[in-house]
Image (cartoon, rainbow, N blue to C red; front, side):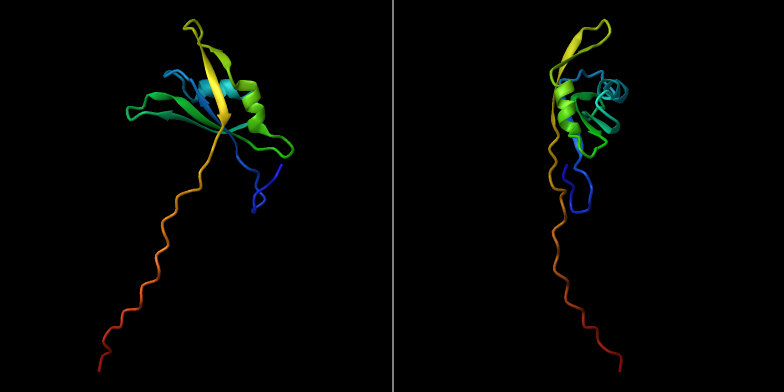
Length: 118
């Protein structure tokens, strides 16, 4: 597996959709932990704090393994039982990251010429 210019592996991250509004990090961890070690879970929430139905799961990257693809193969279109409340189907895709936004570089300001004391 290719590394970046700093020798780091690319993130092994997936984007999950179709989650019920009752899902939290613990439930999502239970669903995803069979794929590999989880580094981070982010359940997206609305302004009121209610889960919106999607989440980001970042797995520990491994040399020689495409963990994100393994997660997609194992979890995409999975039926998840809610214990008597029915079930739901999740959709899993590879997470897409954009380059971080950076402030535009401002040209240096010319030095201010202060009057010299006599």
